[in-house]
Length: 209
Image (cartoon, rainbow, N blue to C red; front, side, top):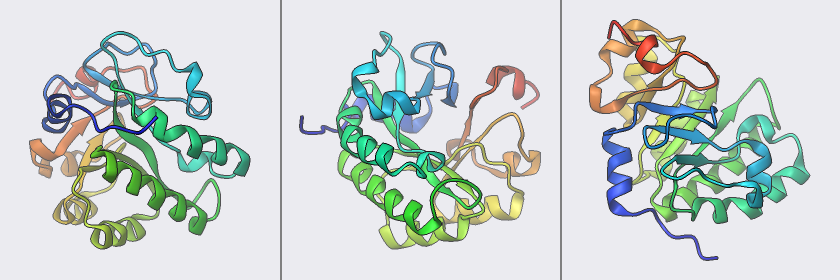
């Protein structure tokens, strides 16, 4: 199957944030149409297990935590283009770099570059997991000059890092644990809210925001 980009209307809806109240979640039963559900590793390795719910939106990518298993990576690289071609998969990710877990950073970067190229070809926004590797990510963003939106999910950094990422053109998504000052300085059009793997809704987390 030749991967196809998502419809313009759905892509625009995702990018401007309308209707999306939970930008990134691992809750497979999250409300359809207002959450972006991240596919688990088992589905990413075997797309035949992916049976999307009507109206639900999904993201698919190879998490850096999964990169230590080389055989699994081969299966996921073969499956990912097929998953990203599904009309209900509206974003690439989560993918990224993690200095504390997974394969070597060099291997993670090589795999990330492959995924980013795929996302750029399909015009898909990218959801990024980054741990102690923002220097590499900023270099990649400057080098690759993507036309799609990159968002750091679960951002917990302080205002200085937030300003640096925003100035480079990235978006930030905030979960249960976040820096209030960083949240407040992020422009609404660059700021997203998420539950990630938590049970608390975004409305409860950000009830005072």
